Length: 191
Image (cartoon, rainbow, N blue to C red; front, top):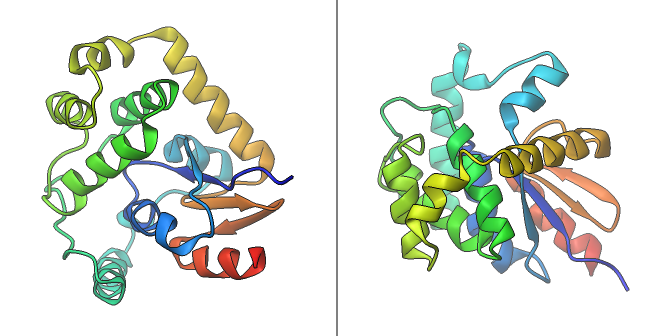
């Protein structure tokens, strides 16, 4: 028996948004979502985000084309993107503990990349939690909880050890597939 695929994500990543939105429709079985800190991965690999390079506008245009191709709503970029997603990723870790990470991640991603809202806003995170049946006040406490902080740190370290060098990365049948555009390849390999 093989385990469900594992999809590593960070809520600041627009490519992560595309993967989370499409995974259930593309893959033979829905993946388990694993929140990790992309900023920590950047630090470990010694290079940062394309969002801070001269290719920013080109990549944003490429993402807009992907969204159209996939039939998703047009991207609306938050004013301060990329945001500091630390609180959001702690909240996602807490949502995973509560068994609602997929719903929570999708709610935050849609707020961020469909409505252009800031995922660093704890009020927005609380509203997303409430929208998916989680306690918004518990979220506010969870993002300060040392146990949640440690779990996110441990998940990020484990992802790095497993070979994850960016998000989204899907681990399926022992193979890492990096990028939202690799979901179809992973699905084909599963067949």
